[in-house]
Image (cartoon, rainbow, N blue to C red; front, side, top):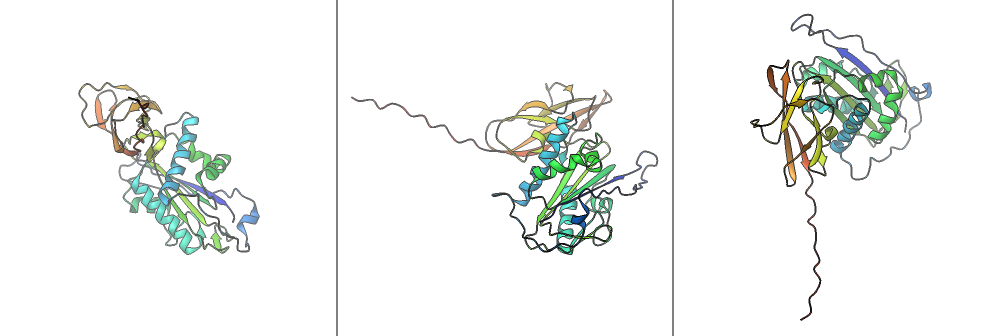
Length: 297
C-alpha cells in the first residue's frame, strides 16, 4: 500500500466586492518520490485501527490538527458539518472513481463542493491524504510539506470538516494529477478548513467528540484580541467576560451524555455576538464500589 498527499488553497475576495468571489489558482505539491506516482503492482490493503469507525477516524484527524495548531500558538478549528459532508463526498468520489485529485470526477473544485454543501466560505483550504491508516501518520507528514503546513498554521481558519473512506478492495490503478498512476491507497482522507465572515464557533477540548472529564478546555477561534464568555446554558446574567485565548478552562455540569457549551463574543468592545455552540459526549464514569469490612457479632 502506498501513500500520497496533496493540498490546495482557495481564497474568496469577499472584502473588495460584496458578493463577488474569485478563486486563486490551486497550489499542489507532489511530496513523495516519483515511484509513488507511477504504475504499481496490486498490494494488500491494511485494516483500519481496531475499534475505529469512519466518524472516529475523521475526529481523530481533527484532534491531531488542532493539537498541532495549539503547539504553534494558534486557535483550534471547530467541527463543521457542512464541510464534513463536502469532504466525505469527495473521499467517496476518489475511492469509487479511482483518482486522487482536488478536482472531482464531475469537474468540481473544493470551493464548488463546499458551496454546494451550503458553506458560505470566506477562505478555504483543502488537504488530501491517501494510504494512511490513521491520523497520526498524516500529521507526521503534513508539517514536512510547506503547502500542507500552510493550512495547519493559517490563523484565519476557524472551522474544518474531514471525510474519511476505507476501501479494502482498492487497486493500483488510481489516476494522479500529471498523468501518473498510483495506489492502492485503501484509505482516502479529505480535509477542508475554512472561515466565514462574522461566524464564531465554540471548540471543546481540541474538537474531541467524546470527553472523559467534566474539566475541559474551550475557546472560540477567530477571536484573538477580543473578549469571550462561556456557559452551560444560553443564559448570561452574571457570566463575566474574559480575554480570548486558544484554550480556556471550563467545567461541564455533572452526569454523562451530550454536553453543549454556549459562547458569546464581544466584538469591537460594543457588539455582542452569539457563538455557534458545540456539543460533545461526556462518558459516564463507572460508579465507585466501596467495600465495608465485615462485622462479626
